[in-house]
Image 1 (cartoon, rainbow, N blue to C red):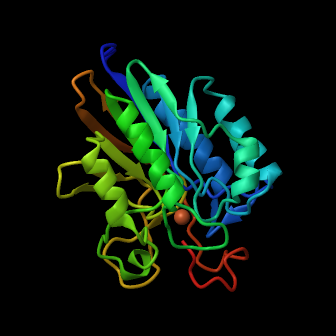
Image 2 (cartoon, rainbow, N blue to C red):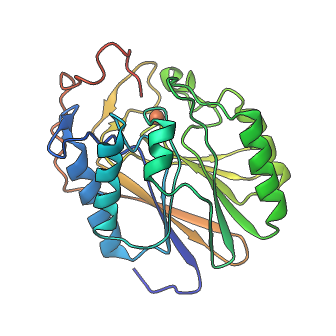
Length: 268
Ligand SMILES: [Fe+2]
């Protein structure tokens, strides 16, 4: 990649689904190994100016799993990082272990929004959180990238659309009204580059482990490889982005390898 020092380069990783045991697998994938492979590949391309981790960082949440996530990232990257929780995360443990404060980098505000509700698969943004976000976006008069876990709109996968942010319209309304420059999210384990009314890019990013198939009514895996997204932010507020994948990572997908999914009905 070229130097391109005039723009900010933000790396997004999402849906790492780590387990406390770094050797453990989920759906046949060693999620710790795939996160490591994603970080190695992305950081070989360039050193990020900031890193966003957009939820489901743990599959089995707890201090050990979050310590593993942090150690895995910090082994290769020491810069600014913002983490937001997903439906598999535990709010209190997440907050205690990981950096969750908004970032200010080179005139850009990188703002998190908490779309998770402990114990629920679906997303929702509480009134307090929406008000906090609105205040942040209003007070920061320059460029803002907002990061959350869940998708605010339907994507044509009914089993995932059930879990979109239930008040996604409110979030979109806030993003549009405050002229946010983009919203990035995870949860759907697939790439989506959506255009919404109001012109704010809404960008869904592949998981660092296994991917879900597009446009299927129910749970289905895709063969696509672990991924990540680069967001290139310019001083004029423009956002360019590019998804990368670790094409040589062997997935060994195995639908029977889901001990932690038992009884939770294809929870994403
Ligand atoms: Fe999720």
